[in-house]
Length: 119
Length: 113
Image 1 (tube, rainbow over the protein chains, first blue to last red):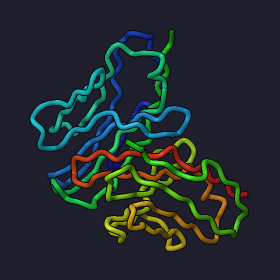
Image 2: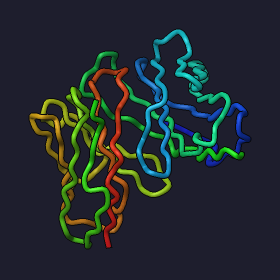
Image 3: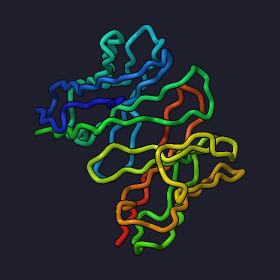
């Protein structure tokens, strides 16, 4: 079974509009973390935002926020006021394991969503 | 603060050859992991090293091996290259701990002909 599912292969959004990228996950581990990464055409993976399974509030980092719905096992990324530089691949990823579990760096990634911002 | 650096950036090898990819972790990071990203796919976990020992491995054959050095730099070695090994290889480092994000390098693009 897919552990991370991103159902939107590609999205086109007008500049300055908000955009939501979908991510659902599957795990039986009560402790896990969810990450979003951005990958421009250059190939580097850029960390955007993190949400822990025990965090009570949705994570926010500047224009990025994570809409975490634990019961639905969903962790959608919201980008407010999109910019041309936001055009890239976006990956949702999950790390399973105990809090403070050192040496557990395995991330399971989804297949990504290619976001294109239209001027 | 120096980020994660990988070398080389591009590499072309012939099927059956061996290759070594290198990674320098971000300063202060004691954990390094390697990922393989085929074209159009998300990265796949190969293995991770913590304090110079492999302590986690994905679904990759033994011809994928690695090392972590005392200065936390790392190598990924692939023997008997196959055409399907053509991919972007990403190295990532972190401070460790469930909430620590992985910081990735720019990757090495390996082409096997």
